[in-house]
Image 1 (tube, one colour):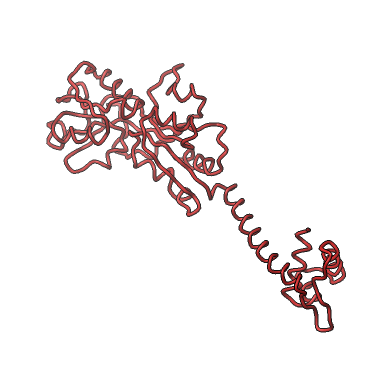
Image 2 (image 1 turned 180 degrees about the vertical axis):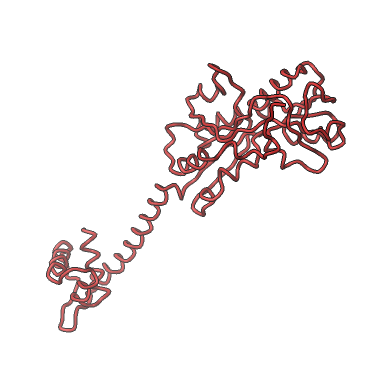
Amino acid sequence: MDLRALECFLAVAEEGSVSRAAAALHMTQPPLSVRLQTLERELGVPLLIRHGRGVELTAAGRALAERARRLFSELNTTTELVRTIGLGTRGRLTVAVGHTVSPRLLPHLIGGTMLEPGVDLVLTEDADADVVERVHRRDAHAGLLHLEPGGPGRPRHAASRARALEVAVVAREPLVAVLARTHPAAGRDRIDLAEVGGERVVVTAEAGAGLAAHLRAAWADAGRAEDARRDATSVMHALALVEAGAGVTLLPAQYSSMLWPGLVARPLRRHTAVVETAVCWRPDEDSPVLRRFLRTALSTPEPDMLAPEHARSDG
């Protein structure tokens, strides 16, 4: 059954007149009458009773009109559903977020378009290795994690690349020292890790391998790789230890605005590798919602996310 013919029939049923229906459909009366006759021949039953005042529906015509209205309503709904799915404004998006990735980054990546009513957004928190594994298994469409420090010719986050995932940087930030407000060095403008007193409070690889590698490198560059340390399996536990007086920890700069009153963050005096947060995803993942998320994530201005007080100096 031709949809156009059905549309023409429904217009006649609504208008009660072939001439008025032709005007509503922006067509002349003769081709409309031909379509109606063709539809009746196809179905093998009369649909209209024609008289001088217009037309009336037969019992078969009334049944067809009722079903046609439901059909076009469902067709419109289906058309809108397909369009929104294709545009990425409807669907499910699961993002696995590494334990050490600052929550302050997330609004820049998921705000606005990802919070539309048609998008079912799910955020999970995992260790870096689990982020990679979840994306690889398609348990998550994308993952956010800290990359390990890299140098010329040295691939970063080999686990992601070994599993053939795409990896792209969405934010860069320096490390800062976090101290208890009562720490003797808390009043300094910048912290020299080689000179600051107290034990090292280290976020371990169990929380995030990428950040843990940055912390090891920073303490090693300061000549303190063998100093006493206290391990924390989460950022929050590290901060609690610092406030309790256990020592000094290092964290990405975005955590600075999340510290509670008993803690302070200070820039480092010596250069350390910039911490990079990356998004990873399967290149064969066919999800319009994911593509929309990636357009937002990869357009984020990375350096602008750092507050001025964390800018590096040569001093």
